[in-house]
Length: 142
Picture 1 (tube, helix red, strand yellow):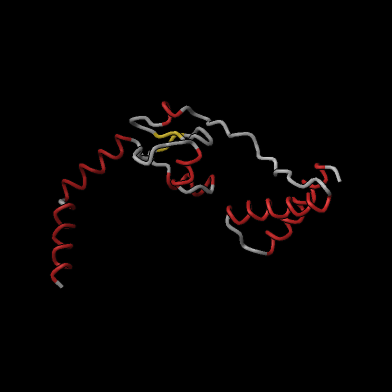
Picture 2 (picture 1 turned 180 degrees about the horizontal axis):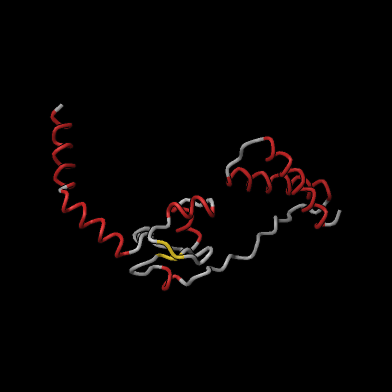
């Protein structure tokens, strides 16, 4: 059996299974690998690997992605003050997966610096840190 046919059959089988069962991304990838491996074994092309798509190139370079006023999405190139909601809605990515995909340090905030600073000043003005500390002390006494 030709490799192209094995790939097509794998896609059909896995899409049929995924259409009636809820699967996470990892489950889906495992399923593809398992089905492809089994079909390859049956076809006599054992040891073949599922072809992986070429590494996705970022829409914006890492240096340009994190600015003072905007943080640019490296998937689509759009600018935002904060990326978390955009990543979840538009690209179905958790911040952890986004960081891993584009090799972004966990210490790098996915929020524009000026936005973060303005929120920090508001919190300080309202005394939120002191209120939080006081609440924690009260809870610890109970």
